[in-house]
Image (tube, rainbow, N blue to C red):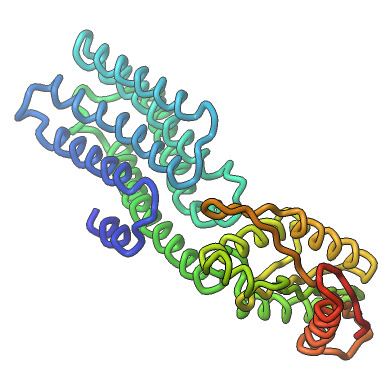
Length: 368
């Protein structure tokens, strides 16, 4: 719990910290209830231990939803399992005590809860989240397997009247599941560290105003595309664009008005570009776009789409509504060209400034 709090303090944006701490509190209460067996009434110890386990894994499920996103129906399945488990505990722990039946149903419900919680991670479509959550998913899956092994063993050989005096088999299951529950805590700390690292990487590569890539990130991406270009027979195109008369927007509407225009243009780029295209803000009102595996004819279509999208914008700021246009220059780099990224950008800039000299609001190319 101290590890979780320490990591949560480093990264305050993480979801589900409170719920994961509550899950650990539930495990602690369950352990204390077992520890006090014989010193407090058995029904209280039995219901306190097993019931708190069920509630704890329901809370863990809620925390995982905060981290990885909610999957329809899984929360209701988990809640139904909690209710079923509590009914079984009260029935066979208090009303008609039967250790074998109680442990059978306890193992079944808890195993299903653990597999259901693992499913929140394993069926995650976001690849980065799936990878960072995989260790915890494996721990949860193995915990479920341990409970089903216990279920089979109890079904075959029965259970002792006093669970604390059980033999090697049940003791081994307890040790196995306890180690895995400790593993879940370590896995959660790993997730918090992975999220912190991911957040720092995003901050280092993203323009804070528009959310697009920054200059450093677009240059790294460009070098990656050039390496592909040299390995494969492919093409790369790039766009350089600059907003027309942007100083006038700042003078008339203030810098916040200019910021509103930049954000609107960034959103326009996101809607006009393809999923694999990369856009960056590299200066005040300067933008660069990399178009992987794209020939000059396709680049012209995309450049015109971007230009039209920007020209159609109506930007609202305070009480004013204004428009903006852009000058776009684009060029192509082929596998048989010896030109570098800097040379490609030089040609894009040359075309863009030719547009600006002619009045702006056009897309123009020049050969590399």
